[in-house]
Image 1 (cartoon, rainbow, N blue to C red):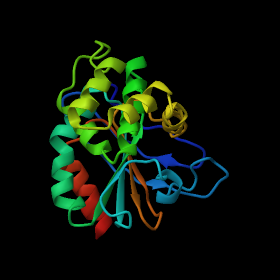
Image 2: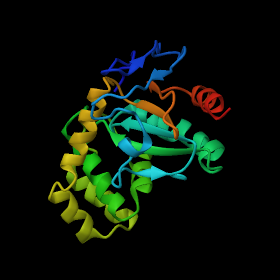
Image 3: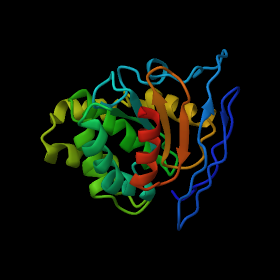
Length: 228
């Protein structure tokens, strides 16, 4: 979903200019003022945003958490998953400096929500990230049926997930409310494009936001400045 644009403002969360184009990615100061209000997500913090059902990779006590809001049908999300995420993992996640979490921003079509629910069913079996990588690694055109319920069940079976458990989970729409809650959260933050990201420090100070398929160097700069 190619909608790279400026992240908006929610309640007392003020996001400064983030300029993204389809051919190049440049960023100015991306600090967010994180002041306390009665908002659903205020203050922006790991404990408020990363729940027991939120897929998380890395050390939960890492100094920084990168939260992606993504859609499994989004081409730019796929590019991030295939090209940028592995570099972040090898440079920051494996060393315990950054953890990575995933929230569902399923906006491209009905199959996006089905894929999101399926990934949470895989998460029940401890296989979210493997399922995530399988979908993004074999991504098809938007709304072409490649992540239909039938295909998702076959993908899970091919990966060795328990068929009865996975199929029952998906058929019952067990995680429909979770997926809808993630979508509502993204809208409250006023993210309007995928992928979008929140970068949180574990002390809650100076959270930052990005929308767009930024290159690794952008994340590297933000992480290094935050860690120092």
